[in-house]
Image (cartoon, rainbow, N blue to C red; front, side, top):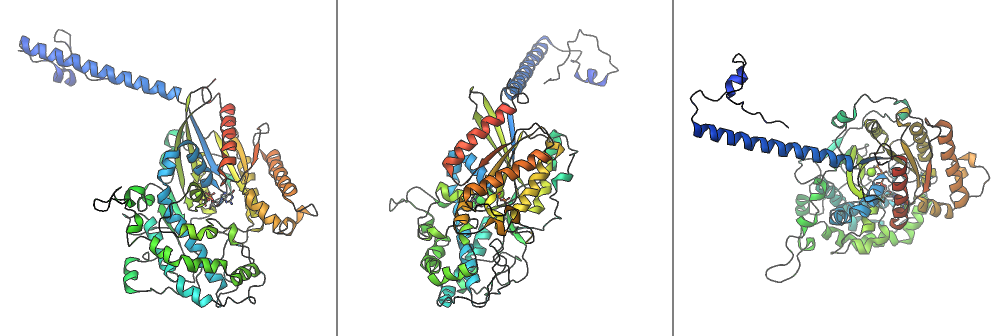
Length: 541
Ligand SMILES: Nc1nc2c(ncn2[C@@H]2O[C@H](COP(=O)(O)OP(=O)(O)OP(=O)(O)O)[C@@H](O)[C@H]2O)c(=O)[nH]1
Ligand SMILES: [Mg+2]
């Protein structure tokens, strides 16, 4: 850095140079003025030198603190954000735990939605051909079956949850936002195979990168209309202006909230625990003392939620409809009593299981020492995986070191939420093929997570047959070992045949990224591999 210095009076200057003329000392400068001026010049020089030194240090530090960039890719609900949460839990546990209370709203919302989905599905008026259960496999015999005798009782007792659902969405949409952000689905642009160049230099690519948001998808259809239980609750729980109402039959828009700290604000620890101790009673004050907190509706509806979920007629009806609620994202129905308790505080596992759909791209940084005690800055990018989100991936391809691609192999009998004609696993294969053959990614390490193996095991055990959905599987045994090996070989073969870099070594892991212990071991392994294969570009050699 250079600070402009006045020149000595005895040095020759061209008076035609206006700058030189402007900074020339006055002709009649006294010895005292001259001393003061020279003193000031000396101090300015010292400041300039200090700044130069700081800049040099910063540069050196940057050189000594290499950066690794990782992209998490895969279709929606493949487990990208969950993998990122595991990374946070491993490397920034204090920050992860500080956010736990904020996830309470998401856990409530996940639970409320599961309950309302079940209620709608078992309703005697349910439209048997409706797609209110978008991610659950389509039923073959919806029209006739077990009647839920207590349906009307459940419906009345759980009615406040419809209002609460809207209220939670509104709270998650950040207290300072007048309305939740609405996302208009953009033109699907998911064929990465066609993306062969990105015109943005690394330094400017950030400006073209979209700002991050999280979406809470609306339930598709609700059979019974929303009725406020009382004028006072209707006032305190406003429905989001203009969003699809509970009674809407048309396909609703999605409501999204920003992934910046805003969505966490409403439920954060500092907001909710007002003071550690009350001056009068010496007791800890918390959200349970706040009459407007959602916990009161959740708590009051707890017994009815439990009754509905445990009802043998409901279970039977769900079986007839072939709705495997246990496999859906954000499944908390086996923990209703714990979650609806007044002093419920989310555990690490709850945060990992909580589901918020990502829109855009979210960057997270972690400083992690390597085995030689050098600090490495890890930048992890979590992207939205839905089809209309995939066009946002490409600007990140140009300077990434590694990609972790997640394919949820339990989803072989499911269809995409955004296009019910497309099998989820087929979509993962196509996406995988596009990715490995992309020329921009020739020198990028690729790690494949064949994810959700816990759900795959449960599904195969329950008798769902792979060959009914993938006829090529033929007569091979329908057990976990054979099915997982089949997927391993199939993804591996696509890489071998289509990889833009034939010598690239592919690492495949079977994962269940909600399992912290297993995932920690795998992530450590992945970190070492990424460092080893990028030694040169990270200047660690
Ligand atoms: N049982 C089980 N659930 C999982 C696993 N991986 C992820 N999930 C759950 O699946 C849901 C979806 O996971 P996310 O991490 O939000 O998926 P995503 O890939 O980020 O999805 P988008 O943000 O829509 O692109 C969450 O509720 C997770 O807890 C797994 O291996 N097993
Ligand atoms: Mg996500």
